[in-house]
Length: 196
Image (cartoon, rainbow, N blue to C red):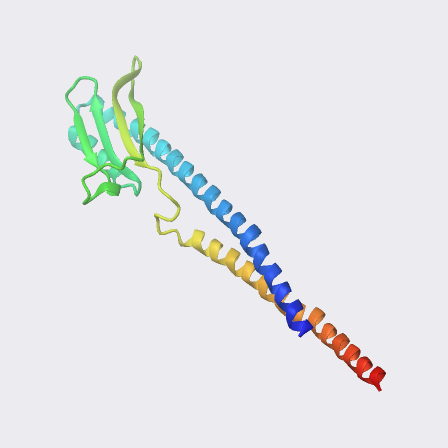
């Protein structure tokens, strides 16, 4: 009877530690990882925008709307891109392409962020601003993409916690409960012998 009571208390302590300490830390880990993933998504979008702004300098200078459209469609194919808008300062080229994140929905995400940079052409006389490129990007969650590597790390972390809990329960049975049962049996035997 005493052994079962001690075992229940021990399992209760383990479960309390899991609920009050490990679970909040696990949730904090998810939250911080998700925020970092969102910030990285925004940084990647800025890098893509700046690289393509350099690539658009010559086609806009030449007023080559076909090449500008191809580059805009390539940018819009990104997984978190809502839309791409490229226009020149002369008012000749004005191309707007919906992104892959909004395909089929025809609605813009209210949480999207607009990134914008100037398109500069390196002319003989020096750099000239020839247009502007805007890209609406959704700061996606780490759970929105098919990121199997992240889920593998989460599964490993959860398995490690489960292994620790199982090892502590088995350890309590071997190192605490068996000696306690022997001690209880010894007390019971002493009580019986003492009552004669």
